[in-house]
Amino acid sequence: MLILGGGINGCGTFRDLCAQGVDCLLIERDDFCSGASAGSSRLMHGGLKYLETGEFRLVRESAEERDRLLCNAAHYVTPLPSILPLRSRFGGILPSIRRFLGGKASLTDRGSLITRAGLTLYDLYGRRVSALPGHKMLSRRALDARVAGLDAGVIGAGLYYEGQLSYAERLGLELLLDGETMHPASRALNHACVVGAQSGVVTYAHEGATHRVRPRVIINAGGAWIDRINADLGLETDLMGGSKGAHIVVENPALFAALNGHMVYFGTRDGRVNLLYPFMDRVLIGSTDIKIDDPDAAQCDEDEAAYLCAVIAEIFPEIPVGEDQILYRFSGVRPLPRADGEIGLVTRDHSIAELTLPEGPQVLCLIGGKWTTFRKFSETAATEVLTRLGRARQRATETMPIGGGRDFPMGADARAVWIAERSHSSGLPAGRIDTLLSRYGTRVDTMLPALSRSDTPLLALPDYSREELMHLLRTERVGGLSDLLLRRTSIALSGRLTPEVAQEAARIVAETLGWNADTTREALDRLPVSRAA
Ligand SMILES: Cc1cc2nc3c(=O)[nH]c(=O)nc-3n(C[C@H](O)[C@H](O)[C@H](O)COP(=O)(O)OP(=O)(O)OC[C@H]3O[C@@H](n4cnc5c(N)ncnc54)[C@H](O)[C@@H]3O)c2cc1C
Image 1 (cartoon, rainbow, N blue to C red):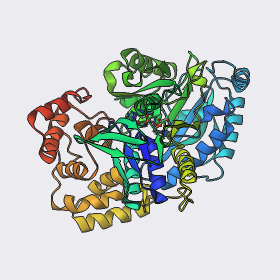
Image 2 (tube, helix red, strand yellow):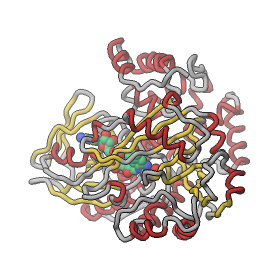
Image 3 (cartoon, rainbow, N blue to C red):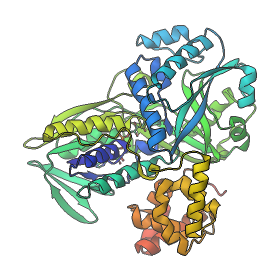
Image 4 (cartoon, helix red, strand yellow):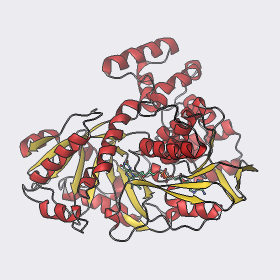
């Protein structure tokens, strides 16, 4: 089995096939989860807005998968109380009907009736796994007690729950490491690329050498790059039509305090839906939805960043958000199927396109999907492969824990006991173990032997240590400085990648991986550093 693309759908399919004992090679041209899977809003959500487009199957599947992730990846997926502000009682009914019937209609206001109906249906779809409380309708007074400073035109809100994914990129990596542990004959490579394919043999390059494989089936999990990967294999396709979405992470203590731990998911005057929620002591604001042809050209442009700052005034008019507060910005391209019409209405559901290489194996292209539904999509893809290999499924993945979510201490008491035990055996302070548990889940056990010998705080970022970074460098397939600072850790995403942090981390990387001065300087030049904190 050859899997091309190491985003969340490639990682999930790799793990599922490894669990069935199938030999897999995964090739990712950049780092794992560096495409759309790093550019998402990081919500494990049921997809409330898909009710309006009548995609009930997708909503049910998303709600179930969200709830499973709250159990299987409890180290990274946590409940997020969410607010849907209301500006009227009857607003949104006609536009909702129009959208439901496939028409175009902007929804600046979802009134209380339509919201109550939508959230009731949403609860029903989440009932099967049921890891979250049901919704409540809040009066303006009850809303003010939770979230302060909302626009005076808001008359109340729907309160419901989604999942928040803290370390998305790490979760993808953990799926790969779990897969390799379950089936050591399989291997996932980053910074590798396909050179070409002929007579069923695929040639790829990795670490300066070329290799050949003859896969029985190929999975193209290249997201927005699916057509380009097909071209590398010698197939001409026109399957994908991407949409770019950008986010910003801002330092705004007033907004952070006003949110009080809630996401606000609100309709804007231009008929879009935006969101903001507290994220790693900052506020995450997103997102745009812009048709794009070249996924390699996607970045959060100045005008998108300005739009995301300005739109907050519609919902929190008294809390100014300025571009000078932006600590980090990121974007990704939603791998949507090619379709005509309004980009916001293109389905977010997943599908598989089957192709065949001349004189070669079948190529299954994984189109669309959401982060939330990766397990189900991966299961479907793996089942397609098993059918072609004439093999039966051996293990289900519905209740399979992921990485540091295995044996994760649930609840405050269990967490305190877990931390006290590790603190005692390693000699590290309980507060430090607590931080590490939040970052790595129970995988922290593999790191503690090294840290108990010495745990030297970074000068520029003392809550990370030199030995912690060295452990990641040695065990987590870090190929470059940005892999470490953007994806194995949340240093960049949390807006703490200052020039000083970058320099200090670069010295550790150079020492551990044996880089020379030129390589180190080039890696530093490519980093998206934050403004000085
Ligand atoms: C702005 C935005 C917000 C979103 N918000 C959410 C959300 O809140 N919740 C949710 O559930 N979903 C969300 N999504 C959707 C979700 O992020 C994507 O559907 C999902 O990450 C797609 O994963 P993927 O593996 O298919 O694609 P990708 O993550 O893009 O992976 C494709 C991989 O293929 C690699 N690749 C490209 N060319 C080659 C090659 N030649 N050889 C090898 N590898 C190659 C790329 O480097 C990339 O890593 C959002 C998406 C965006 C863009």
